[in-house]
Structure formats: structure tokens, C-alpha cells
Image 1: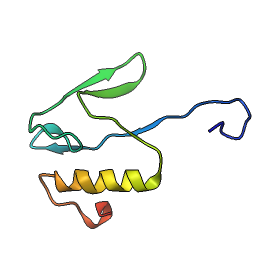
Image 2: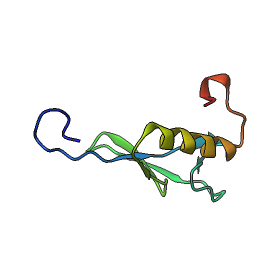
Image 3: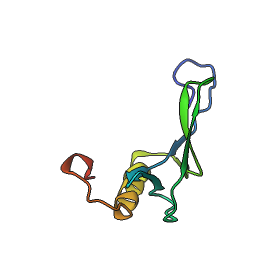
Image 4: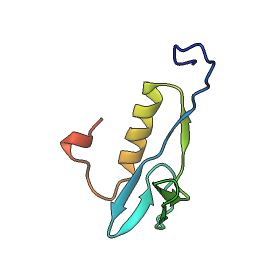
Length: 84
């Protein structure tokens, strides 16, 4: 979409879903059972998780499906606030 401004900007949205369990960061969309490395990029002011899957989505139904899939891979049960 162009964001309504007529500038023709392209938007691409991707979803990642992780869990911190026993001091390990785990990818819930591409589970390997191995912990991922968290790195801070102070120049950009962001924290990145190396190897974390990013799945492109085009709508809400795809996001909800990925949340359900990720919840199935969790080590701990989701709380009521996380249920989709």
C-alpha cells in the first residue's frame, strides 16, 4: 500500500515469535531446540536475535495462524492473555 500519502511506499510485514525458557531464547516458528543468540546493535538502538525466523504475512488471519502454531511449540503453557 501507499499509506494514503500517494508516495507509493511499499510495506512488507513479517512475524517472528520467540520464547525465553530456562535462560534460552527459542524460535517458536522454526523450532530447533537450540538457543538463539541475542545481540545489541547500539548504533541502531535495537536488539536482534540471530537465526530467528521472520515469516512474511499479508493479513490478520496469517498472523493468528502463526501465533497458534507458535503456541503449540511453547515449553510453557500460554497464559489467558496470550491465547488466540
